[in-house]
Image (tube, rainbow, N blue to C red):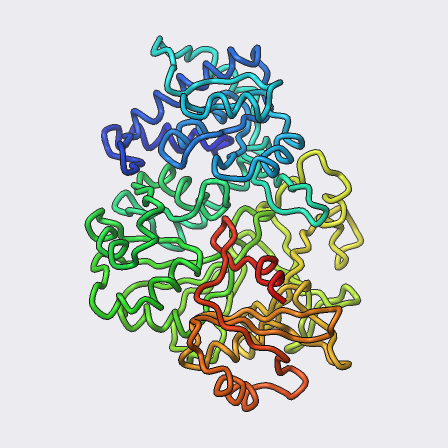
Length: 503
């Protein structure tokens, strides 16, 4: 039984020492090379922080395979890592490091000065200047014997309502549990080649990284510039031998809306997974028609539950005006849908989606107040302590017993005496053929619903007539605005705050 994810790397190094594990647009690392370089860096970390363990290690690097080395080095040294995005505004990075207070920051020559300025009290290691002396195996093995599987592996920072980012603390056991479920459910093997899209500070990347290590797979870190040209991107997938992708819907929508799948269809893709926001069925169907024999799966989960807690392998046809289910809980995970009285919903009643299981984070780093508000006692159990995570998402069951994501509690509004899900308006707009993307917002001050759509040339009068045949009168938007494209946040989701600034 593993108590640390480094066990996966050890096993894959024994089985596939010379096989490429990760590659970016500059270089590649075999499993054996990754293990050795990670252990060398782990020794440097240990020396830099005087042998301390269970300390935060900031990783301030461009998105490349050096990040992977740094992540495993943190684990080998008995510490936990936090990815720090070099392109993030300095004000946000400063807020993150104020919370994290990293014991050490791993960086490179180009970003060494910025790292020192960002966290002057932290030790610093330049990964490009590592001493290639022999690894101290006795030291690292001694450290491993002191660790247990509930020790932290990483911290991912999410937005906080007060403007202070929240650091989600995830343990080794949660990631091991997740990696085991993924391998069993999707039959990942040493022949799997992932095309990584997600930034490493976004939890979707966890699937690529730890499935690779567990199963002896390969991950190709796709250059960000490829996503600027859907045609180049689709060709790159085949040229790189990529057969499995786990992307945010925005990336898949970009390709679908471009029309490139009519002429350039990735021939090697066999598994297409997505997660992070609702996938519009219209764009999903474009992919399905282009690559009909691939496995498609809709995954769901917030950062606080180790990436994914529910999934639906799409096994039937869906009309453009139907929502794709999020399906069923992952193995060793339980989902509770609770109404306003903290009782389990019945029938098709809508309630808050809550989760219990090994997947749960330890909470928010150095923030007991936010932790106690989101990670609470299971209201259906009054016999012993049992935490659930309240996601803030609304869900219901369909007639097949499948979970349907309804929207955020934040996006549920009270308008003209009616409770309305803004997501329902977006779904209705998405069934109007010319609409590529939609986003419904509510102006509390004016008590008015606004609908943003792309592209710019959508006929707003015809769209409004379409909405009148699909929505109740009180749900119709007072204003429809068309945009060339939507602003996206760093995780590739629609930036609703920036859109709201236009109202």
